[in-house]
Length: 174
Image (cartoon, rainbow, N blue to C red; front, side):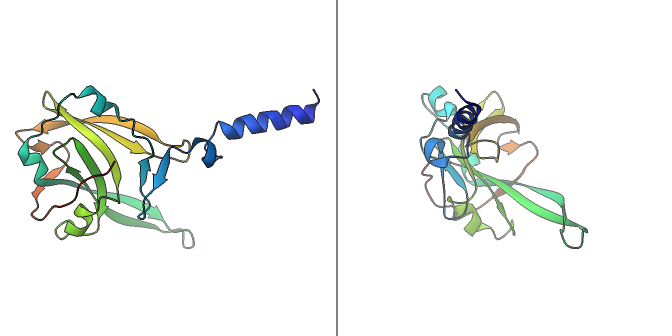
């Protein structure tokens, strides 16, 4: 086999085993808001839990935290401080969504938009909430990430502030 054929064979093998060829290995679709959802759901938390029950107080609340990051502007090379309001919304069937909003006090539209944000499942075990979410990064074609947060008291999550919100609607479709 000549070196040209070998190089072509290596390139074809690499392309079919990477995210470079989305029609071969694409594991996700993109919502109208640019969020990623798995084509075929493979969340392990749903398989581990035979029956899911949630504390009612978790479902009526939005859990949020305020993060700040520095962004460097390309043209001026100045660093600008940007504040990001990140929230988690939990559903009674074990699903959750993590998103962002510009205004946490008047964010009902963002809280009810289930097409925007990171989708996943959660379960409660021994004063911990275990989250599993589907994320897409430039290095892969979609993967499942699991992490846990501690529950404080009856319905507080460590690192997040609780806010009761009236008017939450929508049913997740992932």
